[in-house]
Length: 488
Image 1 (cartoon, one colour):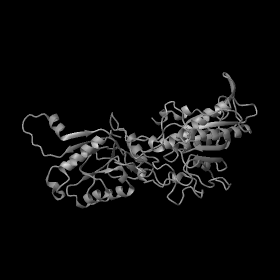
Image 2: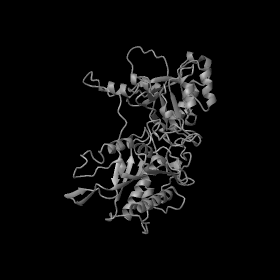
Image 3: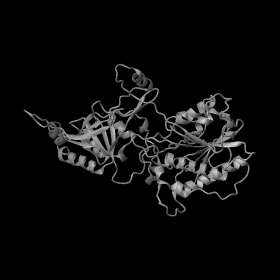
Image 4: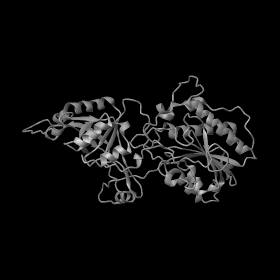
Protein backbone atom coordinates (compact mmCIF):
# COMPACT_ATOMS: atom_id res chain seq x y z
CA UNK A 1 0.00 0.00 0.00
CA UNK A 2 1.21 3.48 -0.78
CA UNK A 3 1.52 6.20 1.82
CA UNK A 4 -1.74 8.10 2.28
CA UNK A 5 -1.84 11.90 2.22
CA UNK A 6 -3.83 14.70 0.69
CA UNK A 7 -3.56 18.37 -0.18
CA UNK A 8 -5.93 21.25 -0.80
CA UNK A 9 -5.32 23.62 -3.70
CA UNK A 10 -6.92 26.21 -5.98
CA UNK A 11 -7.30 25.20 -9.61
CA UNK A 12 -5.77 27.98 -11.74
CA UNK A 13 -4.43 28.24 -15.29
CA UNK A 14 -0.86 29.49 -15.11
CA UNK A 15 1.29 30.49 -18.10
CA UNK A 16 4.91 30.96 -17.14
CA UNK A 17 7.36 32.45 -19.63
CA UNK A 18 11.10 32.40 -18.95
CA UNK A 19 12.84 31.40 -15.70
CA UNK A 20 10.64 30.97 -12.64
CA UNK A 21 10.66 29.66 -9.09
CA UNK A 22 8.39 26.62 -9.34
CA UNK A 23 8.41 25.94 -5.59
CA UNK A 24 7.20 29.45 -4.85
CA UNK A 25 4.31 29.15 -7.32
CA UNK A 26 3.35 25.76 -5.89
CA UNK A 27 3.38 27.15 -2.37
CA UNK A 28 0.91 29.87 -3.35
CA UNK A 29 -1.46 27.26 -4.84
CA UNK A 30 -1.26 24.28 -2.49
CA UNK A 31 -1.95 23.80 1.19
CA UNK A 32 -0.91 20.41 2.52
CA UNK A 33 -3.24 18.86 5.10
CA UNK A 34 -1.56 16.46 7.52
CA UNK A 35 -4.09 15.72 10.30
CA UNK A 36 -6.01 12.98 8.53
CA UNK A 37 -6.46 9.22 8.32
CA UNK A 38 -7.48 7.32 5.19
CA UNK A 39 -9.89 4.51 4.46
CA UNK A 40 -7.81 1.61 3.14
CA UNK A 41 -8.36 -1.51 1.05
CA UNK A 42 -8.63 -5.12 2.19
CA UNK A 43 -9.41 -8.33 0.32
CA UNK A 44 -10.72 -11.83 0.96
CA UNK A 45 -11.09 -14.95 -1.18
CA UNK A 46 -13.85 -13.52 -3.37
CA UNK A 47 -13.72 -9.74 -3.49
CA UNK A 48 -12.19 -6.46 -2.32
CA UNK A 49 -13.48 -4.02 0.29
CA UNK A 50 -12.44 -0.56 1.45
CA UNK A 51 -11.18 2.41 -0.55
CA UNK A 52 -8.45 3.59 -2.88
CA UNK A 53 -7.71 6.80 -4.76
CA UNK A 54 -6.67 6.93 -8.38
CA UNK A 55 -2.96 6.40 -8.93
CA UNK A 56 -1.42 9.84 -8.45
CA UNK A 57 -4.42 11.04 -6.44
CA UNK A 58 -8.10 11.80 -6.95
CA UNK A 59 -9.00 15.45 -7.60
CA UNK A 60 -12.37 17.09 -7.08
CA UNK A 61 -14.07 20.43 -6.41
CA UNK A 62 -14.76 21.13 -2.73
CA UNK A 63 -18.37 21.24 -1.63
CA UNK A 64 -18.68 21.86 2.09
CA UNK A 65 -21.88 20.40 3.59
CA UNK A 66 -23.42 21.14 6.95
CA UNK A 67 -26.39 18.85 6.36
CA UNK A 68 -27.75 16.13 4.10
CA UNK A 69 -29.70 18.86 2.28
CA UNK A 70 -26.44 20.54 1.24
CA UNK A 71 -25.17 17.24 -0.15
CA UNK A 72 -28.38 16.62 -2.09
CA UNK A 73 -28.11 20.13 -3.55
CA UNK A 74 -24.73 19.57 -5.17
CA UNK A 75 -25.69 16.11 -6.40
CA UNK A 76 -28.63 17.72 -8.18
CA UNK A 77 -27.13 21.04 -9.29
CA UNK A 78 -23.38 20.46 -9.62
CA UNK A 79 -22.00 21.67 -12.97
CA UNK A 80 -18.23 21.43 -12.50
CA UNK A 81 -17.63 17.90 -11.24
CA UNK A 82 -16.02 15.75 -10.17
CA UNK A 83 -16.73 16.87 -6.60
CA UNK A 84 -15.32 15.97 -3.18
CA UNK A 85 -17.99 16.63 -0.55
CA UNK A 86 -16.82 17.61 2.93
CA UNK A 87 -19.22 16.19 5.54
CA UNK A 88 -19.51 15.86 9.31
CA UNK A 89 -18.88 12.22 10.30
CA UNK A 90 -22.44 11.88 11.60
CA UNK A 91 -23.67 11.90 7.98
CA UNK A 92 -21.53 8.89 7.06
CA UNK A 93 -23.81 5.92 6.46
CA UNK A 94 -24.30 3.10 3.99
CA UNK A 95 -27.08 5.15 2.38
CA UNK A 96 -24.80 8.18 1.94
CA UNK A 97 -22.00 6.13 0.35
CA UNK A 98 -24.49 4.38 -1.94
CA UNK A 99 -25.97 7.74 -2.98
CA UNK A 100 -22.53 9.17 -3.79
CA UNK A 101 -21.48 6.03 -5.68
CA UNK A 102 -24.54 6.07 -7.94
CA UNK A 103 -24.84 9.84 -8.40
CA UNK A 104 -25.05 11.30 -11.93
CA UNK A 105 -22.73 14.06 -10.70
CA UNK A 106 -19.32 12.43 -10.51
CA UNK A 107 -17.88 12.08 -7.01
CA UNK A 108 -14.12 11.55 -6.79
CA UNK A 109 -13.72 11.41 -3.01
CA UNK A 110 -15.19 12.10 0.41
CA UNK A 111 -13.68 14.11 3.26
CA UNK A 112 -15.13 13.71 6.76
CA UNK A 113 -14.58 15.72 9.91
CA UNK A 114 -15.67 15.72 13.54
CA UNK A 115 -19.16 16.87 14.45
CA UNK A 116 -19.74 20.21 16.09
CA UNK A 117 -21.78 18.26 18.66
CA UNK A 118 -21.28 14.92 20.39
CA UNK A 119 -21.52 11.86 18.16
CA UNK A 120 -24.27 9.55 19.39
CA UNK A 121 -23.20 6.36 17.58
CA UNK A 122 -20.88 5.24 14.80
CA UNK A 123 -19.99 1.63 14.10
CA UNK A 124 -18.37 0.56 10.82
CA UNK A 125 -19.07 -3.13 11.54
CA UNK A 126 -22.03 -5.24 10.36
CA UNK A 127 -25.06 -5.57 12.58
CA UNK A 128 -24.25 -9.29 12.88
CA UNK A 129 -20.44 -9.42 13.16
CA UNK A 130 -18.72 -12.58 11.86
CA UNK A 131 -22.13 -14.13 11.21
CA UNK A 132 -20.87 -16.59 8.58
CA UNK A 133 -18.43 -18.13 11.08
CA UNK A 134 -20.80 -18.24 14.05
CA UNK A 135 -22.58 -21.38 15.25
CA UNK A 136 -25.55 -21.47 12.92
CA UNK A 137 -27.74 -23.77 15.02
CA UNK A 138 -27.84 -21.23 17.84
CA UNK A 139 -31.39 -19.80 17.93
CA UNK A 140 -30.09 -16.34 18.80
CA UNK A 141 -26.73 -16.25 17.07
CA UNK A 142 -27.98 -12.99 15.57
CA UNK A 143 -31.12 -11.50 17.13
CA UNK A 144 -33.93 -10.49 14.81
CA UNK A 145 -34.26 -6.97 16.23
CA UNK A 146 -31.29 -5.18 14.63
CA UNK A 147 -28.62 -7.77 15.40
CA UNK A 148 -26.06 -7.69 18.19
CA UNK A 149 -24.70 -4.43 16.81
CA UNK A 150 -27.83 -2.42 15.90
CA UNK A 151 -25.75 0.69 15.12
CA UNK A 152 -23.63 -1.12 12.54
CA UNK A 153 -23.40 0.50 9.10
CA UNK A 154 -21.56 -2.38 7.40
CA UNK A 155 -19.23 0.11 5.71
CA UNK A 156 -16.21 -1.87 6.87
CA UNK A 157 -17.12 -4.47 4.23
CA UNK A 158 -18.23 -2.15 1.42
CA UNK A 159 -16.23 -1.72 -1.79
CA UNK A 160 -16.17 2.08 -2.02
CA UNK A 161 -15.25 3.42 -5.50
CA UNK A 162 -13.54 6.59 -4.23
CA UNK A 163 -11.09 7.55 -1.43
CA UNK A 164 -12.34 8.65 1.99
CA UNK A 165 -10.42 10.53 4.68
CA UNK A 166 -11.26 11.56 8.22
CA UNK A 167 -9.78 14.83 9.52
CA UNK A 168 -8.89 15.52 13.16
CA UNK A 169 -7.59 19.07 12.90
CA UNK A 170 -10.35 21.69 13.32
CA UNK A 171 -8.19 24.53 12.00
CA UNK A 172 -7.59 22.64 8.75
CA UNK A 173 -11.32 21.96 8.43
CA UNK A 174 -11.89 25.71 8.89
CA UNK A 175 -9.34 26.47 6.16
CA UNK A 176 -11.18 24.19 3.73
CA UNK A 177 -14.49 25.81 4.61
CA UNK A 178 -13.01 29.29 4.13
CA UNK A 179 -11.67 28.27 0.72
CA UNK A 180 -15.08 26.87 -0.26
CA UNK A 181 -16.91 30.03 0.85
CA UNK A 182 -14.48 32.32 -1.01
CA UNK A 183 -14.35 30.53 -4.36
CA UNK A 184 -17.13 27.94 -4.69
CA UNK A 185 -20.22 28.89 -2.72
CA UNK A 186 -21.94 31.05 -5.32
CA UNK A 187 -23.17 30.90 -8.92
CA UNK A 188 -23.19 27.11 -9.07
CA UNK A 189 -24.44 27.14 -12.66
CA UNK A 190 -21.22 28.88 -13.77
CA UNK A 191 -18.73 26.91 -11.70
CA UNK A 192 -17.25 25.20 -14.76
CA UNK A 193 -16.14 28.59 -16.14
CA UNK A 194 -14.01 29.79 -13.21
CA UNK A 195 -11.22 28.76 -10.86
CA UNK A 196 -12.44 26.72 -7.90
CA UNK A 197 -11.16 25.49 -4.57
CA UNK A 198 -10.39 21.80 -4.97
CA UNK A 199 -8.98 18.84 -3.09
CA UNK A 200 -6.55 16.12 -4.04
CA UNK A 201 -6.91 12.89 -2.04
CA UNK A 202 -4.00 10.51 -2.39
CA UNK A 203 -4.42 7.04 -0.91
CA UNK A 204 -3.66 4.71 -3.80
CA UNK A 205 -3.74 1.00 -2.93
CA UNK A 206 -1.94 -1.45 -5.21
CA UNK A 207 -4.00 -4.41 -4.01
CA UNK A 208 -7.14 -5.21 -5.99
CA UNK A 209 -9.75 -7.85 -6.95
CA UNK A 210 -9.29 -10.57 -4.26
CA UNK A 211 -6.68 -12.30 -2.12
CA UNK A 212 -5.58 -14.87 -4.71
CA UNK A 213 -5.06 -12.24 -7.38
CA UNK A 214 -3.18 -9.89 -5.09
CA UNK A 215 -0.84 -12.57 -3.72
CA UNK A 216 -0.17 -13.92 -7.20
CA UNK A 217 0.82 -10.48 -8.45
CA UNK A 218 3.02 -9.93 -5.39
CA UNK A 219 4.85 -13.19 -6.07
CA UNK A 220 5.65 -12.35 -9.72
CA UNK A 221 9.23 -11.10 -9.90
CA UNK A 222 9.62 -8.99 -13.02
CA UNK A 223 12.61 -6.85 -12.03
CA UNK A 224 15.18 -6.34 -9.30
CA UNK A 225 12.71 -4.24 -7.25
CA UNK A 226 9.48 -6.28 -7.03
CA UNK A 227 6.35 -4.49 -5.87
CA UNK A 228 4.54 -5.79 -2.79
CA UNK A 229 0.85 -5.41 -3.60
CA UNK A 230 -0.58 -6.71 -0.32
CA UNK A 231 0.22 -8.36 3.01
CA UNK A 232 -1.78 -11.09 4.76
CA UNK A 233 -3.78 -10.18 7.84
CA UNK A 234 -2.17 -11.85 10.81
CA UNK A 235 -0.43 -11.50 14.13
CA UNK A 236 0.25 -13.62 17.19
CA UNK A 237 -2.03 -15.01 19.89
CA UNK A 238 -0.74 -14.58 23.44
CA UNK A 239 -1.19 -17.31 26.04
CA UNK A 240 0.05 -18.41 29.44
CA UNK A 241 -0.77 -21.07 32.03
CA UNK A 242 -1.62 -20.73 35.72
CA UNK A 243 0.51 -23.74 36.66
CA UNK A 244 3.59 -25.14 34.94
CA UNK A 245 2.95 -27.59 32.11
CA UNK A 246 5.77 -29.78 33.36
CA UNK A 247 6.78 -31.34 36.67
CA UNK A 248 10.21 -31.89 38.17
CA UNK A 249 13.41 -29.88 38.34
CA UNK A 250 14.53 -27.51 35.60
CA UNK A 251 16.92 -29.93 33.91
CA UNK A 252 14.94 -33.05 34.72
CA UNK A 253 11.31 -32.14 33.98
CA UNK A 254 8.53 -34.23 32.47
CA UNK A 255 5.38 -33.07 30.67
CA UNK A 256 2.11 -33.33 32.60
CA UNK A 257 0.10 -35.29 30.03
CA UNK A 258 -3.16 -36.07 31.85
CA UNK A 259 -4.26 -32.54 32.82
CA UNK A 260 -7.55 -30.90 31.94
CA UNK A 261 -7.72 -27.22 31.09
CA UNK A 262 -10.02 -24.27 31.70
CA UNK A 263 -9.57 -21.54 29.09
CA UNK A 264 -10.07 -17.91 30.12
CA UNK A 265 -9.99 -15.89 26.91
CA UNK A 266 -10.41 -12.40 25.51
CA UNK A 267 -9.74 -10.78 22.17
CA UNK A 268 -6.77 -8.55 21.48
CA UNK A 269 -7.75 -6.77 18.27
CA UNK A 270 -10.10 -4.17 16.92
CA UNK A 271 -10.50 -2.51 13.53
CA UNK A 272 -11.90 0.55 11.82
CA UNK A 273 -12.88 1.82 8.41
CA UNK A 274 -9.90 4.18 8.64
CA UNK A 275 -6.20 3.74 9.36
CA UNK A 276 -6.75 4.44 13.05
CA UNK A 277 -8.32 2.40 15.81
CA UNK A 278 -9.11 2.89 19.48
CA UNK A 279 -10.77 -0.21 20.96
CA UNK A 280 -11.46 1.11 24.46
CA UNK A 281 -14.48 -1.09 25.19
CA UNK A 282 -13.67 -3.75 22.62
CA UNK A 283 -11.18 -5.27 23.24
CA UNK A 284 -9.45 -3.40 26.10
CA UNK A 285 -12.07 -3.91 28.83
CA UNK A 286 -12.05 -7.67 28.24
CA UNK A 287 -8.25 -7.86 28.00
CA UNK A 288 -7.75 -5.88 31.22
CA UNK A 289 -10.29 -8.11 32.98
CA UNK A 290 -8.40 -11.22 31.81
CA UNK A 291 -5.05 -9.95 33.07
CA UNK A 292 -6.67 -9.04 36.39
CA UNK A 293 -8.13 -12.55 36.68
CA UNK A 294 -4.72 -14.08 35.93
CA UNK A 295 -2.96 -12.00 38.59
CA UNK A 296 -5.68 -12.68 41.15
CA UNK A 297 -5.71 -16.44 40.55
CA UNK A 298 -1.94 -16.56 40.93
CA UNK A 299 -2.36 -15.02 44.40
CA UNK A 300 -5.17 -17.45 45.25
CA UNK A 301 -3.30 -20.49 43.91
CA UNK A 302 0.44 -19.83 44.07
CA UNK A 303 1.12 -23.53 43.43
CA UNK A 304 -0.92 -26.53 42.34
CA UNK A 305 -1.80 -29.00 45.08
CA UNK A 306 -1.16 -32.67 44.40
CA UNK A 307 -4.92 -33.27 44.09
CA UNK A 308 -5.42 -30.55 41.44
CA UNK A 309 -5.77 -32.07 37.97
CA UNK A 310 -6.96 -28.94 36.15
CA UNK A 311 -4.80 -26.12 34.83
CA UNK A 312 -5.92 -22.73 33.53
CA UNK A 313 -4.91 -21.30 30.15
CA UNK A 314 -5.17 -17.54 29.69
CA UNK A 315 -5.42 -16.72 25.98
CA UNK A 316 -5.60 -13.39 24.15
CA UNK A 317 -6.75 -14.00 20.58
CA UNK A 318 -5.55 -11.73 17.79
CA UNK A 319 -7.49 -11.24 14.55
CA UNK A 320 -10.98 -12.12 15.81
CA UNK A 321 -12.56 -9.22 13.96
CA UNK A 322 -11.88 -10.91 10.64
CA UNK A 323 -13.54 -14.35 10.73
CA UNK A 324 -11.98 -15.36 14.08
CA UNK A 325 -8.59 -15.98 12.46
CA UNK A 326 -6.78 -16.00 15.83
CA UNK A 327 -8.95 -18.62 17.54
CA UNK A 328 -9.32 -20.61 14.33
CA UNK A 329 -5.55 -20.91 14.04
CA UNK A 330 -5.19 -22.03 17.66
CA UNK A 331 -7.97 -24.63 17.24
CA UNK A 332 -6.34 -25.79 13.98
CA UNK A 333 -3.04 -26.32 15.83
CA UNK A 334 -4.78 -28.10 18.71
CA UNK A 335 -6.62 -30.50 16.40
CA UNK A 336 -3.33 -31.46 14.73
CA UNK A 337 -1.38 -31.88 17.94
CA UNK A 338 0.71 -28.74 17.41
CA UNK A 339 -0.20 -26.83 20.56
CA UNK A 340 1.61 -25.49 22.52
CA UNK A 341 4.46 -26.52 20.18
CA UNK A 342 4.75 -28.50 16.96
CA UNK A 343 6.91 -31.15 18.63
CA UNK A 344 5.77 -34.80 18.33
CA UNK A 345 2.89 -35.72 20.70
CA UNK A 346 5.05 -37.88 22.99
CA UNK A 347 7.97 -35.47 23.20
CA UNK A 348 9.76 -35.23 26.58
CA UNK A 349 9.55 -31.41 26.77
CA UNK A 350 5.92 -30.22 26.74
CA UNK A 351 2.50 -31.88 26.77
CA UNK A 352 0.29 -31.77 23.70
CA UNK A 353 -3.06 -30.07 24.37
CA UNK A 354 -6.04 -31.16 22.25
CA UNK A 355 -9.54 -29.58 22.06
CA UNK A 356 -10.98 -32.44 24.11
CA UNK A 357 -8.62 -31.52 26.96
CA UNK A 358 -10.50 -28.21 27.38
CA UNK A 359 -13.35 -28.72 29.85
CA UNK A 360 -14.55 -25.12 30.21
CA UNK A 361 -14.18 -21.99 28.06
CA UNK A 362 -14.83 -18.58 29.65
CA UNK A 363 -14.64 -15.54 27.40
CA UNK A 364 -14.44 -11.99 28.72
CA UNK A 365 -16.06 -9.80 26.09
CA UNK A 366 -17.13 -6.13 26.22
CA UNK A 367 -17.22 -5.19 29.90
CA UNK A 368 -17.89 -1.48 30.08
CA UNK A 369 -20.29 -0.32 32.78
CA UNK A 370 -23.84 -1.42 31.94
CA UNK A 371 -27.06 -2.39 33.65
CA UNK A 372 -25.62 -5.80 34.55
CA UNK A 373 -23.09 -8.43 33.53
CA UNK A 374 -24.65 -11.23 31.49
CA UNK A 375 -23.53 -14.83 30.96
CA UNK A 376 -24.27 -15.99 27.40
CA UNK A 377 -24.16 -19.69 26.57
CA UNK A 378 -25.86 -22.41 24.53
CA UNK A 379 -28.09 -24.40 26.87
CA UNK A 380 -31.68 -24.58 28.02
CA UNK A 381 -30.77 -24.07 31.68
CA UNK A 382 -32.34 -21.28 33.69
CA UNK A 383 -29.45 -18.82 33.48
CA UNK A 384 -30.07 -15.18 32.49
CA UNK A 385 -29.39 -15.60 28.75
CA UNK A 386 -29.76 -19.24 27.59
CA UNK A 387 -29.33 -20.12 23.90
CA UNK A 388 -27.82 -16.70 23.29
CA UNK A 389 -24.26 -16.42 22.06
CA UNK A 390 -22.93 -13.07 20.80
CA UNK A 391 -19.97 -12.94 18.38
CA UNK A 392 -17.02 -14.44 20.28
CA UNK A 393 -14.10 -16.84 20.02
CA UNK A 394 -16.27 -19.44 21.75
CA UNK A 395 -18.06 -19.96 18.43
CA UNK A 396 -14.82 -21.32 16.99
CA UNK A 397 -14.36 -23.87 19.77
CA UNK A 398 -18.00 -24.99 19.73
CA UNK A 399 -17.73 -25.60 15.99
CA UNK A 400 -14.62 -27.72 16.66
CA UNK A 401 -15.88 -29.44 19.80
CA UNK A 402 -19.67 -29.38 20.22
CA UNK A 403 -19.50 -30.91 23.71
CA UNK A 404 -17.39 -28.10 25.21
CA UNK A 405 -18.91 -26.12 28.07
CA UNK A 406 -18.53 -22.41 27.53
CA UNK A 407 -19.92 -18.99 28.29
CA UNK A 408 -19.33 -15.38 27.29
CA UNK A 409 -19.45 -12.61 29.90
CA UNK A 410 -20.53 -9.21 28.57
CA UNK A 411 -22.35 -6.03 29.56
CA UNK A 412 -25.16 -6.62 27.05
CA UNK A 413 -28.06 -9.04 26.88
CA UNK A 414 -29.59 -8.73 23.41
CA UNK A 415 -27.67 -5.81 21.83
CA UNK A 416 -24.28 -4.17 22.36
CA UNK A 417 -24.11 -1.31 24.82
CA UNK A 418 -21.12 -0.13 22.80
CA UNK A 419 -22.44 2.29 20.13
CA UNK A 420 -18.98 2.67 18.57
CA UNK A 421 -18.00 -0.98 18.07
CA UNK A 422 -15.12 -1.44 15.61
CA UNK A 423 -14.65 2.23 14.84
CA UNK A 424 -12.09 4.88 15.66
CA UNK A 425 -14.61 6.40 18.12
CA UNK A 426 -14.52 3.45 20.54
CA UNK A 427 -12.34 5.55 22.82
CA UNK A 428 -11.91 6.22 26.52
CA UNK A 429 -14.31 9.16 26.62
CA UNK A 430 -17.14 7.03 25.26
CA UNK A 431 -16.82 4.38 27.99
CA UNK A 432 -16.60 6.82 30.91
CA UNK A 433 -12.93 6.17 31.69
CA UNK A 434 -11.22 8.57 34.08
CA UNK A 435 -7.61 8.32 35.19
CA UNK A 436 -7.38 8.84 38.95
CA UNK A 437 -3.58 9.18 39.17
CA UNK A 438 -3.36 7.40 42.52
CA UNK A 439 -6.52 8.91 44.02
CA UNK A 440 -9.21 6.70 45.52
CA UNK A 441 -11.32 4.86 42.95
CA UNK A 442 -14.89 4.70 44.17
CA UNK A 443 -17.93 2.56 43.45
CA UNK A 444 -19.66 2.89 40.09
CA UNK A 445 -16.44 3.56 38.18
CA UNK A 446 -15.29 1.57 35.16
CA UNK A 447 -12.22 0.38 37.07
CA UNK A 448 -14.26 -0.88 40.01
CA UNK A 449 -16.68 -2.62 37.65
CA UNK A 450 -13.91 -4.50 35.80
CA UNK A 451 -12.27 -5.43 39.11
CA UNK A 452 -15.58 -6.82 40.42
CA UNK A 453 -16.11 -8.91 37.27
CA UNK A 454 -12.53 -10.21 37.49
CA UNK A 455 -13.02 -11.14 41.16
CA UNK A 456 -16.19 -13.06 40.35
CA UNK A 457 -14.47 -14.98 37.54
CA UNK A 458 -11.36 -15.71 39.60
CA UNK A 459 -13.39 -17.11 42.51
CA UNK A 460 -15.50 -19.22 40.14
CA UNK A 461 -12.41 -20.65 38.42
CA UNK A 462 -10.80 -21.31 41.83
CA UNK A 463 -13.83 -23.36 42.84
CA UNK A 464 -13.85 -25.20 39.49
CA UNK A 465 -10.15 -26.09 39.86
CA UNK A 466 -10.08 -27.03 43.56
CA UNK A 467 -13.66 -28.12 44.22
CA UNK A 468 -13.83 -25.67 47.15
CA UNK A 469 -15.09 -22.11 47.58
CA UNK A 470 -12.39 -19.48 48.01
CA UNK A 471 -12.08 -18.30 51.61
CA UNK A 472 -8.96 -16.13 51.35
CA UNK A 473 -8.52 -12.37 51.19
CA UNK A 474 -6.91 -11.82 47.78
CA UNK A 475 -8.31 -8.82 45.92
CA UNK A 476 -7.55 -7.13 42.58
CA UNK A 477 -5.30 -4.09 42.29
CA UNK A 478 -7.42 -1.11 41.25
CA UNK A 479 -4.25 0.79 40.37
CA UNK A 480 -3.36 -1.92 37.84
CA UNK A 481 -6.87 -1.92 36.40
CA UNK A 482 -6.82 1.89 36.19
CA UNK A 483 -3.45 2.16 34.42
CA UNK A 484 -4.01 4.54 31.50
CA UNK A 485 -1.34 2.75 29.45
CA UNK A 486 -4.10 0.29 28.50
CA UNK A 487 -5.73 3.07 26.48
CA UNK A 488 -2.61 4.54 24.89
